[in-house]
Amino acid sequence: MSRLQTQTKKSVPQGAILVAALITLGASLPFQACKRAAPPEPSSSAAPHPVSLRWTLDQTGSNKLLVEVQGLGAASLDRLRESTWTPAEWQRLLSVYAGRPGSTSDPSLPPMLGTYRVESNVLLFESHFPVEPEAEYRALFRPAALTGEAGEPVTSVYQSPSRNSSPTTIVSHVYPSADVLPENLLKFYVHFSAPMSRGRIYDHIHLRDSAGKEVELPFLEIDEELWDPAMTRLTLIIDPGRIKRGVRPLEEIGPVLEAGKSYTLAINSASKDGVGVPLKQSFEKTFKAGPSDREPVDPALWKTQPPPSGTLEPLSVIFPEPMDNAVTPRSIRVTSASGDSIDGKAGLEDQERRWTFVPDNPWRRGGYKFVIQTTIEDLAGNNIGKAFDVDKIEPMRKRHGSSTVTLAFEVR
Image (tube, rainbow, N blue to C red; front, side, top):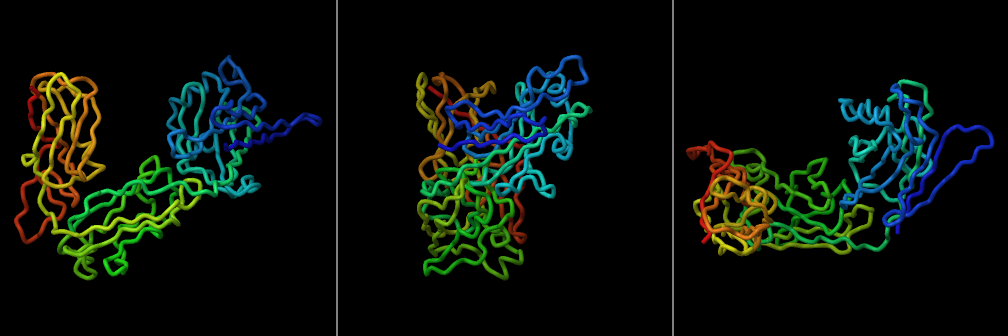
C-alpha cells in the first residue's frame, strides 16, 4: 500500500517542535499537515481551526493529485465561491509544484496546472495530469492573498510512492471490433485496463501492412493526445487529409488503407501506464480493409426490435453497418410518446451493429420514440444527412436542418 509522506515548513520560535506525519492512504485516516492559524479574516469571525493542507489522489482512477486547504473561515469560502479569478490569481493564493525530491523549492519552478474550486468547507486544487512516481510535490498556501493582511505561508510536501515494477496494465479492447473495416475508416479507440501516462504514445503505436511494412504517418498526431478524463481510452484519428478526395495528402502520399488489403494495428508493451510501468504485454488487431463508405447515416434503414411490456428486456436497434463505439451510445435516447425521457443503460453489441437499451423500470404498453442526434457517426465519420467526405464533382446532398430526428415505435 502506498503512503503519503508530508513535511511542514515555516518559521517558528527557537525550540519549537517540527511535526511530521506518515499516514496510510485509503482505509487509514487522511493526512493533515497542521500549521499555525491564518490571520483573522476581515469579518468578525476568525478561522475556527488552524489552516492545514491535505493530500489525496483522485479515486476515479485518473491518479490525479488533490490538495485540500482546510480550516478556512466561512467568509473566505464564500468569497472564493463567488470569485472570478484568473489562473494566475489562484496560483498567488495556492501554488503546487512538482519535481525531483528536494527541487520543489526552486523559485524558478513554475506552478502546476490545475483547477480550483470550493467543495463543502474546503478549497480544492486538482492537478491536470496524473501523479508521477517517485516525484516530490510541494503546496504553498498564502493567506495574505485572501485576507489582505500579513500572514505566514503554509507549506506541505508530498512524496509520491515508488513505481510498481510488476506490469499489470493491458489493452482491454480496440474498437471498431469488426474484422473488415471501410478503407476510409476515421477512428480507432484503444481501451486500457488502468490509467495510462500522457506523452509519446504515438511512438508505441504502429499500423503495418500484411508484409509487415509500416504505413507512413497514418494518424493525426496531436500534442495533447486524445485521452478520456480517466486516461483509459485513447482515440486515434486517421489523418483526414488521406481520406478526403481532392486534397493534397491523399493525392501525394496516398490513402492509409486500401480496400482488399490486410493490416495490423500494434500497440507495443513499451507504452507506460499511469505510474510509469510498461504494459504487461503487447497487443495486435489484424483486419481487412473493405470498400469505402461515403453514404450519410439513414435511420430509416434501421430495424427496431421492441421488447414486451411489463419486462426489463432490452430494446434493440439493428444497424445496416457498424457504428462508432464512442459516439453512438450517447447519440440515441428513448422517450415516451409525450417526450418524457426514459432512464436506462445503452450499449453496442455484435461488432457495433446492434444498439441495446435496458430501462431502469419495466416497459409500459404504448408508444415511444427514439430521439437521435444528427451528429451520430458510422465508422467513416458520416452523420445523418451529411457524408464525411463529399466529392466536389458529385452534387452535394442537402444537409439535415435539425439537430435531432425521431423514430416512433410501439411496446405491446
